[in-house]
Length: 445
Image (cartoon, rainbow, N blue to C red; front, side, top):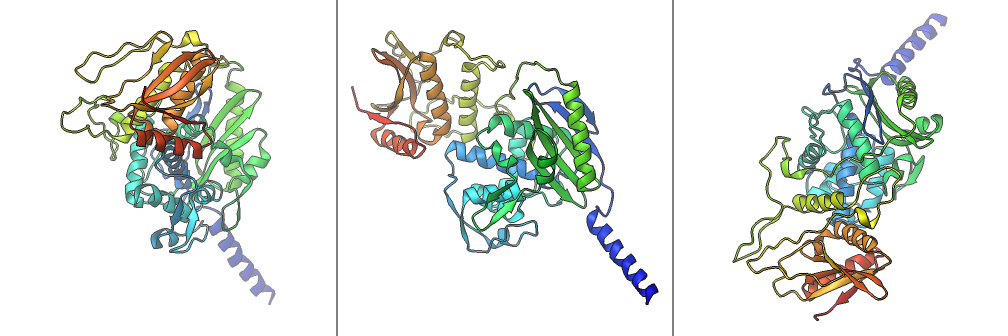
């Protein structure tokens, strides 16, 4: 009897060992950067193409945040779950085919619980199919400079050709922090309401154990090992560390903590913040190859307006923001820092010069569009320009052809969009009001 118990104990120990560790030791890679400047503080096999596992969901959520910002979809959009999404293996939220759920809950489930069914549902909601969404993910990766990354799905389960690197995933973590700070707190939540249930963070042990940790994402498959991209902030210094191929959750967390400590030790106490540049969609393709750059201002055709790629529109707006807003650490830009504005004519007729006190920051072929909107009055010209740029990026769907105009009045600086049809102006105000942005339509004259 005693011998049988020993044999049974041995079998159970073997089973526990199998499920607690990868079946095959995954290749190891690591990187640490100073998040403020992007400077590499340590790296090991950082460019080896490996399985990212659920680190993939960082890009899934980046594309979702981008789509929300562009107005392609809303966090309140109700998504109908497909049988394909519902059939994804764990980790999962437990979605059922035909079920309806708000997009915001899918975001929380994918980011906090790392739910595969939620990630697939997000991809299908944005692009119609997971395959099309994966192509968009790859194109976005190329636009961000993640040159050794290709995606085949939205969740990160092992699939041929679905590969990334420690360098690219470290870059992805930095992008989420700087490009979408309004959503970054998602990754530090110990738990969150995912609509169907409250879900716990797969990274909660590390978040609780490491001082200053506030994200970002875990990942595990047998092929990948235990992966983690982690960010921490201490005394104004922020460091991001990535590990691919950990042997267990505990050993991976210990290694990441060691790397973050190394990063804080090597990072300078004071350094100028150099935010990453806007995504360059003009040279990115779905397959990751480089295409010939196209003009962001296509010539006007006499019969119809030119078709414009939404990615290029977003790039143009981002470029405009990067030119107007100096990215210098701990320095509030002053109105004097704004470069002189250029007026670009897109029709054969000479452009009309602005009146004194009026700044035109973008021309459009108004073609008889005599309506506009006002989004507020501000104390300085610079503040008005900033609000126009921010609003243009937020509501690109209805404002892509509008003319941004700042007009001085006795009460301050008026921030206006003009050169719009009455219908488009009304629609813009409705959509902005839904985002709690003050808006009033302006009539002709």
